Length: 245
Image (cartoon, rainbow, N blue to C red; front, side, top):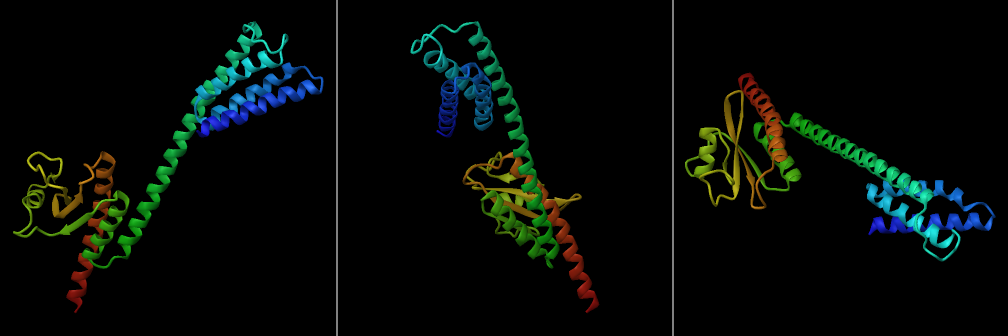
């Protein structure tokens, strides 16, 4: 709908320009650069060269019908019109490709800025944590907010009453639960929380809305790595405080 509104405005502006030139006694042929400008704006605003090409064709047909002699008669496109149409289409397609690439670059930059902002908040929160449990709590709240899923980070070996999928994840150090072979019907995915060959606990993620994609698992792995650094730091700090007492 937005693209149609843009084309309607540009189409009206182009025909108004031709009509204005005709009233001033200026050759209406000078409006062709205005048509090119309209095609350029259409391609930029719609992020597609197809809309720009369609506008260029509409300009030519309307010009032939309304302003070229004999008027109010649609004539077969002449050689000049065909050249103009080729120019319009070429401009539209080129600008469509350029704007599409620029749009992807802007989106990538926005995603990078958002990711860096989130990681900065994570690093600040973990730095301010004073206990291993506090670090895990901050990280699980951070992940739950971004993934929009319930996330639980548990330190230590699961108890005897823990589900078998949780114990398997901790003991075998592999993902278990939802989407993994042998765990049909389990609504959560369990990921090992480990670093440097050591296992510290388990990350549980609710997957009732579907399995985790690659980007989500990469994010969890990155958050888990930073969390473990904070856990080790806070553990050492607690041990030092105990020894000083």
